[in-house]
Length: 333
Image 1 (spheres, one colour):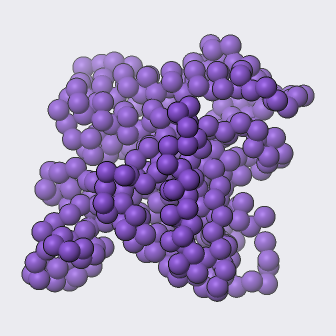
Image 2 (image 1 turned 135 degrees about the vertical axis):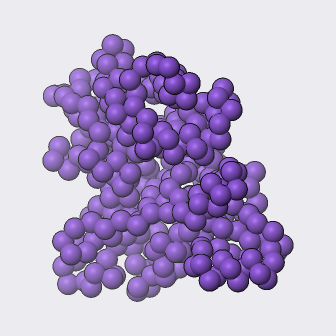
């Protein structure tokens, strides 16, 4: 880190996630975070409605005949109208079914990071890893995010999400181990040795999959299930509550898919470095936060004849901000 550079011109870390966008900064000898929900809702435009949104300081834009309410305010409006929020991203990349996708992400990112304090200010931003079916629009997504950051005056560099977790969590282990970001659109995985990524991939079953499947079998809104999942849900088996049961069932499916992908991808690696000792595995992201997740994931992994010795399995102490923090640390290097 350049100690003489003013705090306002220091590099930034940006987690462009399917569910949340988070910016990480340094200041007052600690990390600082700001986040917005990566979602929006549209309302019919009228001068009266627009003036009311302005008066209440609601984050919005006028787009043609619609008012687009984005970020955290979108969640509030969705609850008032008992409606689903719309998502500008899907499966870790810009949502091709949403005409407002790039514009909404641009607005949220601009609100969080602002214009660069100095031309060429560094920012590292997260991107997903390719899945088994190919890159799935990652190249277009990455170029689009880099372009919008460049328009704000930043020198923008992508970093894969799993590697960002390693930068954020495994400094004490010389950035050697496995980092997993269990997000909404994807679970992103990276195995790195001395900060060099060896294997990276993504698994499509993640938080949104749990929400949509549980909503389908319970008749509830996926948005409400996501909130319940993040606030009160515990992964502790089936009981008399149908929503808890549905979430448990689909959580088990996600854990099984993640463990199987880990086992098969690492087993199939042809040029895996020789590891002299066991390595740590750390998980982060909102999908990993319910109580009981790490314990069940750990049991499933140890029962899977895993090809690499694991010294510990733990969750990040700040799971929602881990990717942004890792992106910031990479930017500071």
